[in-house]
Image (cartoon, rainbow, N blue to C red):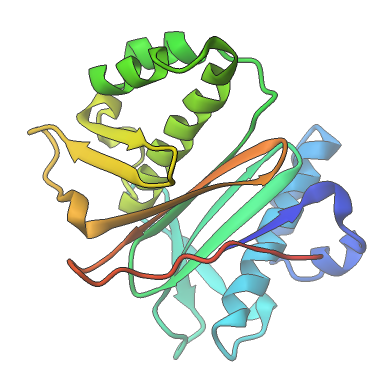
Length: 228
């Protein structure tokens, strides 16, 4: 998994040369320059990251949307079965790449104004709300984003968006880095089939990665900065 700080990009023109015509057109439709820049960095990082794992030029990658809109690799012919997940927020983009397995990543800016506890009480599981309420008040905004990024990473890995109820799966982060996961009867899944990693790639951001695994066969999730 790779991340890049959007305010540290050294050559935006070189990155734009990596985008397809459709991506360039979409980038130019953004009204805010900051949003266009985030899109540029995110999609350039995706292409560069995929090419780290295959003998394919960054510009040659092709994508198509799945049923719920998640993009997947569609070419070129002969490319390995790589999967990916992309996320961006103010100041940071993140891209997770895996080989023939479901993967999801989410990154959030910690300073965004939001009623975390109110959102949790409305949408999260009872156990998550209780865990969030148990955190010291100054810590609750960060703790909420811990839960939020984990939930988003899992949903992205499943590729079904919000088709799964947010209160149907419950995370339990711990101080030692272990992340517990449980499911209600409404979701047909097994916690043993998932591995998670959570980090703060910068003082301003929270990041979570979800990877599908075979039972008793954990994967190594590495988080690496990328200079663009």
